[in-house]
Image (cartoon, rainbow, N blue to C red; front, side, top):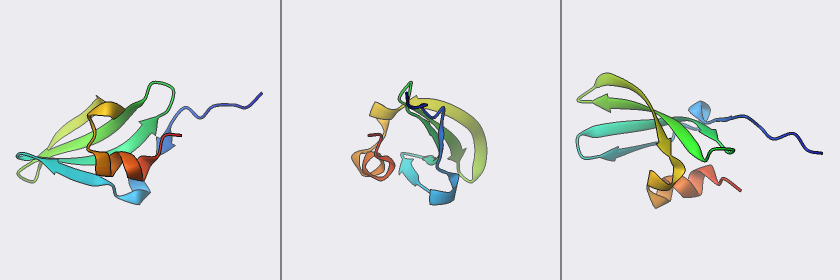
Length: 68
């Protein structure tokens, strides 16, 4: 039986996007729960990490991550 990965590190791919005044940088993807960890910045100041559902990402970002 294949062992599933707990998370996929995406830091080295430098995937990021902007929505309104917030800048998001994707850090890692969790295939089992279909969530991503993102670093949130506002006006250059770090606001912290958040866990977002994969479905809430823009289409362009989803294509880069390829969960399948």
